[in-house]
Image (cartoon, rainbow, N blue to C red; front, side):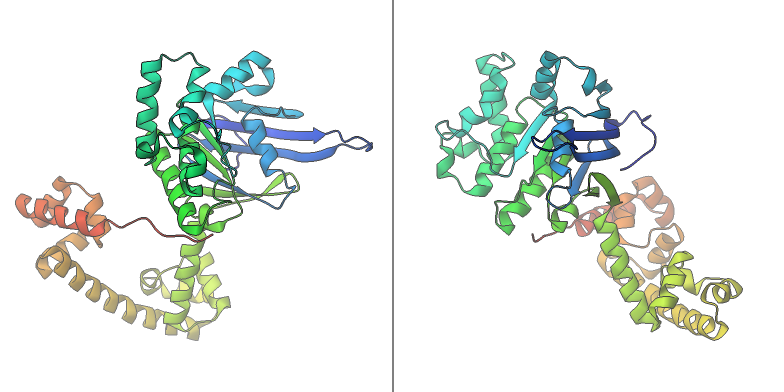
Length: 379
């Protein structure tokens, strides 16, 4: 996320007004790749970076990875400013803190899968037995342990990228920098790779920064930064945006209202049937600017909302195998969906239902039914 402040304990990467100029032979003026980037990446986050060719997105990765140094501004990683480090310190930083994943995999063709993943560990003088154990664990984590003696050319593109990710994780880096990691993969393999990165960062707390052209990749990330002409043009959450669009489309259809009225309602915080049904009429008239429209949509929202509540209660009773009275008690306690029940604790459920054994059974059913598989995506 972008920020004017760099004071936060959980922020592993902080860039403050970072600029990068390149001198090109034959040109008086330098090429300005980055024109003032201020951004923070929190520990354990997964962030997508998008932008047209030449916008500065790869330069941004190179500065975070210490493959290049900013012309001005500060690049701070885990509390240390990269611009003040010696060459030896930067080499050590790259080896221990950063894991790189590239579009072209960059595996060494005459080494086996095992040897490719082991190679970065040799620079840290890790003992052979410790290296072997670490490699086996990494290949297991990316689903490639049974391919450990294969050479890269015998692997599919998706398998090679899995090996590349295992190699990037070899020295337990705090940050993985991935430059178009799905660019050379088919849709299914790309989906698998992004899900794997998401799984690994949730398990290990690794921060993952991905340069990508794909909105589908962005939807798996916590946020998506758009870089244009060396500056951050926007910081978006694509999943939230898609959910809001779907919400607007549904409300527009249910209430048969124009986009103009819909946008007025959303800007005022009336973004659901429940909010509109329970709104103060004077306030609704003020927001819409039309008493006839306000009264019509309030009446329609009230009917649809009550109908929806009744239907949802029936579904909840059927899913959890409980009585209508028990469902009413759950609603009164703020648990209106399977997800709500699955996220609560037994004590709260027991208090709502008045029966500890029933609460345990209800929790178990909700936990199973609320679970959902990873969403598919397409490049």
